[in-house]
Length: 195
Image (cartoon, rainbow, N blue to C red; front, side, top):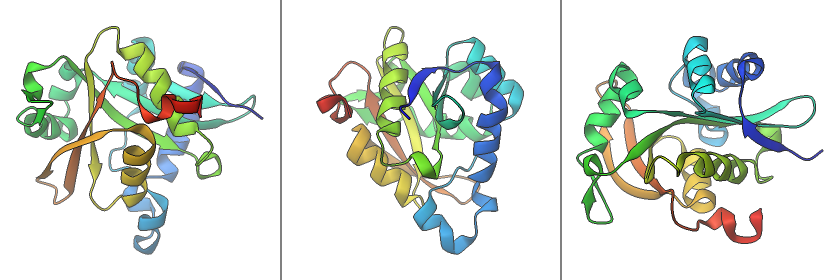
């Protein structure tokens, strides 16, 4: 069954929350994290609802089930969120293509999650492509962070999505993060062959 990539709505949020819950860091046994990938932040349903209303939630689904999702936060949303405000303070001091990130118009690629059954099938590329096509009307770049322990996410985003690594920082929580940027106005690896 082929996947459809589209803006998410309120009807998608229960499945999005369920997928997020299955992939939270603390719920995955330590020995399985390296091979699974994981999420550090549990986004509340009302935040997903707001993101869906603002056009910042993209889902991949077939007729019956959710294959994955991607959610973006604006700079303002991130400043009011303890988890993302620390990321934002650090990322804005880094540079991309010779310019300080704080001087660029950006959106935060807050979270992407793909059900294991739908990985390596173009799901990540489809989510990135759909979100990029929506966000490039308003922004120059998307910025995100990838936990240094999360090799699955790192490899997928670097190899398949074409994100650019611009720096690292250590969070007050003890997690170590890699900051990455996606240029929303350039052709990217997932555009080749429309995988």
